[in-house]
Structures are given as C-alpha cells and as structure tokens.
Length: 479
Ligand code: NAD
Image (cartoon, rainbow, N blue to C red; front, top):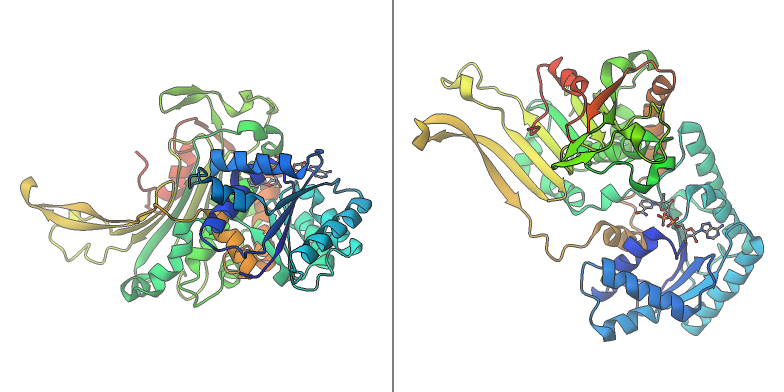
C-alpha cells in the first residue's frame, strides 16, 4: 500500500464513527495500510487532536469487528490521526487545510498521494470538489482520489449536474462512488464462483434459467431518516442504486460483458407501461416478530398524507444473448417480515413431461444469500426413502466461514486506496440506472401507478405476488 494522506470530511459524523474508523483499524491490523499513513479528520466542532483521537478510539470499542483491547495496537493506530476545524463552505478553511496537509506530508516524507473522503451530506459534494481544486489541495505531487457515497443525485438531471461539478475537479478514474452492497463479501465472491466453476458457468443462460428473483427486505421502518426518506422512497433509496448494481453484477456473466453493458441492455420502460411492470407499496400498521409496528403515515416526521413508496417490486428483462426472455423480478421494502438480501435463480424444468414423478418435481433453485447470512444453496430433487420414496427437495448448502471476513467498508476503502475501481459504481452505470428509473419516478409523481398497502411484517402488497402470478411464477421463500 502506498503512503497516503487520508482527508476525511465529516469526521465527527455517524458514518465515520460506525464504519470508516473501524474499517481503517481492521485494515491497519491486517497490515494493509502503509506505515506512513495519516488521517486528517475535518469537522465543525472545535476539537484538539487528542480529543479526536479519543473519539476514534471510542468508536473502535463500540463498532470494530475485532477487539480494540490491545492498547499497543490502538496507540500505534490513533497516532496517525490529526484534526482540523473546517466549514466546508469557507474557501479560507481549504487554504488552512492545505497547510496542514503539506506539513504532514513533509513530516512523514509522504509522496503526496491524497485521498479525499466526503462523509458529509450530498449537498456539499460539488462545493467541496470545487474548493479542493481552487485551493490547490487537488494539485498533489502524487495521485488524488475522491470517495463519495450515494445519493448521487435525486433524479437523472440532478445526477448529471452533480457529475459535471465533480468532473471539473476530478477525472472519472479518480472518483470512487461507494455502493456498500458491492462491498458485501458474497457480492464480491459472485464473479469467482461463476468463473472458476464451469458447471455454474454453463447453466448461467436463458437456455436453463426460468426466472431470477432479487430481494432486499428490511424489517426496520424509516428510523431517524423520516425527513429524507419521505422525499426519496424505496425506488431512489434502494432500487436505483443497490438493486440495479446487484442486477448488473449478476448479469455480467463472469465478466464476459461489463456492468455498463448489462444496464444498457435492460429493456427500457415507457412511462405509460410502468403500471404493468412496477408495484408501488406503502406499509400500514402491523406487527414484526410479535411486536406492534406503526403504519408509515403515523411514523414521526412523515407527512400524514404521504404517498411515498416504502416498497417496490419491478419486473424487467435484459435483452442480450445470455438473458433474453428471462423475467427478472426485483423487490425491496421496509417493515417486511424478515431482513434478508438474496438472489434466487429458478431453473427450467426440462423433465416435466418425461419424468414419471413429474407432479412432485420442483424446479432446481440456486440461491445466493447475501446478508445477513452468507451462502450458496442449490435446491435439488431427491428420492425420499423414509417417506414412501416420493420425490422431494433437498438443499445442498454451502455456508462460508464468515469469521475473519472483512466488512464491506474495509474491502471498499482498501480497493480505493489501491486504485482498483472494480467494486464501485461508475458514472456510466449510475447515469444509465437513473435513465432507466426516470419513467418510474415520473409515473409515481403523476400517480399513474396505484399505491398498494401492506401490513408491516409481511412480504409486501398482494399486487407483488400477482405480478409474478401473471407469468405463472411466485416468490420463493415467502412463508
Ligand atoms: P452526520 O450528520 O452524522 O455527519 C455529517 C458530518 O458532516 C458531520 O461530521 C458534520 O460536522 C459535517 N458537516 C456538516 N455540515 C458541515 C459544514 N458546513 N462544514 C463542515 N462539516 C460539516 O451524517 P452521516 O450519517 O455521517 O452521513 C454522511 C454521509 O454519508 C451522508 O451523505 C449520508 O447520506 C451518507 N451515508 C451515511 C450512512 C450511515 O450509516 N450513517 C450510510 C450510508 C450513507
């Protein structure tokens, strides 16, 4: 790993505390950070270096996956941290920051590689990028890179405007857009699972696959994000980014095509057809794991007349040589029955007519559990001898040993420091995803799609089941 100055905007914030410091600490323990690594934290609060270091240490005790009890390691780690007060809207503060950065680079004989991580609200992204450029912070002797995290815009137009602003200060290959779903270990393993297993590779086409189902269900409601979520909904908060990135990753066919090409091949939706392929849902009162849960409109901070979507289910098709004619169903929602992210691939049933036990033969399923558990399961049919020899299904389970596995932010920060763009959301993908979603946003705004309600603690509205039933399919594992 090259020696780097890591400049963290929003160092006093929640994301820094919960994810970024623990990730850096675990990279440090794994000797994946350079010995001359330094972190300059920025925030509006008046903190000394010591107060900042104490906060970082505290966050490790609370959030690090590995124990932060070894005081020698902690001491060695936090001594790399410095703090600077900064109002991101004041250009003078960037000039001051430049002095701090240059001083650290001299002290540690650093080559001038600068990583700027913007852990602040997206409304600041453009301004910060421009000020980095204007102040000279961006004229480093080594490389410069930028890490940002979604939301990347609110719709196609605002995303394009943001990208133009960023583009004035950073080249595309210098921008690392985090989509933390791409950092999840199971998602990172998908490529190799397929590439290194010809048996999987060969069945990964429309010759064998009947349909694909991608689900990301949450049990939580809007939590503390009511004001934000009520203007965003499941379509922007989850579908446009995480769900479409999962689709692109799955659709790559072990790298024979790129994520961009997958997204380009998704058949476009016309606004007037959105109603046929998209289900919009919102939760009402119900109960989750035995506990009562309020309806969306009764949540604190939500407009009591809100028509915001807390659930979407979408049917789409990828028009390329591997995926043509395979219906792909994607759903995501809040306050659902279980917390789970998974991909289910249902295979065709060529034996339906020839096999004598046909009535009882279920399709083969290949299931990728992404979170909270990780694993791959192949559901096959077998002869159940104790049960009169009937044909029934049995799961062939592959569960990975997850202990010691790096977390998403560790993988992603490490890759960005290495300059490896593989598991990031690239601008062309982000733009194509917004283009694809735009007719849905407009159809929702113009109320061209009914809002279906579902009680909290279920798998979404009945309309989501009907969407699959139209094709003779059903969601797997809803019970
Ligand atoms: P937060 O409100 O906890 O922290 C925001 C940080 O920005 C604070 O350090 C604050 O001091 C700083 N800040 C705000 N205005 C500033 C100004 N004018 N000058 C200097 N600093 C300023 O927010 P967060 O939860 O840490 O989220 C940060 C970003 O990460 C947001 O874009 C959010 O959407 C995204 N994000 C957060 C999470 C999470 O788990 N918290 C997850 C995914 C994405």
